[in-house]
Each structure stands twice: as C-alpha cells, then as structure tokens.
Figure 1 (tube, rainbow, N blue to C red):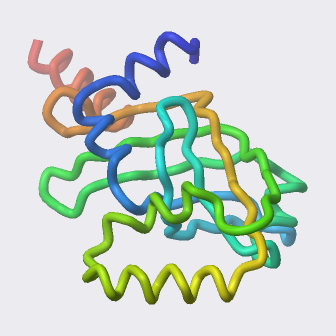
Figure 2: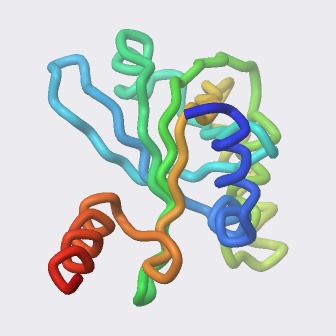
Figure 3: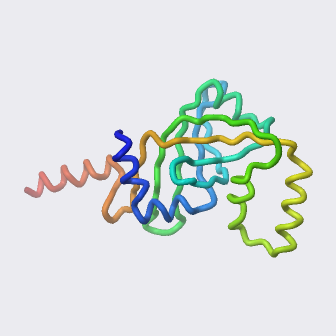
Length: 164
C-alpha cells in the first residue's frame, strides 16, 4: 500500500473519530510463536500510533524479535465501525512517564481528585516506560455502509454477477 493511500484512509472523518478513541487491540506474535491480541491504550499523533507499557512487560521481547503488528480500533455499536492498521513496532525506552501515557488516559471519566491520585500512583510505580510506536504501513476502514470486509465485497460482486 502506498503512503498516499494510507494517508487517505486515515484522514477520513470516521478514521479520525476512531483514532481519537482510548483503546486499540494490538496483535503480535509471542516468543513461543503463538498469536496474541491485547487491549492497550493509545494515542494518535497524526502520523503514528503511540502506546506505552511497563519496561518489564512480557510483550517487549516478542516485539523486539518480531516487530510486525496489527491494530484494530472499533466501535461497540451496529453496524460496527472498524479501522485496521498494520505496521512495525519501534520501541523507545524512556525515563519517567511519557506525555502520551498521561494523554491517552485523560479521557477516562475521573474526578479532578481521582486524576491527581491516579497520576501520583503512576509516577510512584514506574521509573520509566517503553513507548511502542507504530507507523502505519497499511490501513483499511470498514463501516459496513460504504466499505466492507474484502471477503464480503467479493461475495457481493459474485451475487451481482449471478443476478446479472
């Protein structure tokens, strides 16, 4: 997929709405060769998906060994809205708490006092974190109105050909 095609998909209003959500599902291959898919908080900075995790997270050795990842950001309503992204994870070990981590957790409903307590707890727990940065190399938006999964598109085309 060419960069201009990826940009076109990610710049659609629905894609921008999905990229403003709190959670993505990160899929990767674990060190034992089996697949993993985990929910993880993220933020979109306009060109990259940024996720943060503990420096001792079990996913990090797997991502170092095989940085190929897939992300799914979707809605919980019918018809679902789904943004699929593929890319490579780059790992950036940082001291302290990355600004993205505080930003990506900013949309959860917390009172101002809860927010202060949460941030104090985070700062006391982590002496550093790892930023998992994914630059999209492929993207597809599925809204079940104007775009469909490729298998469903194929079935619809075959049906139209039969009807003729």
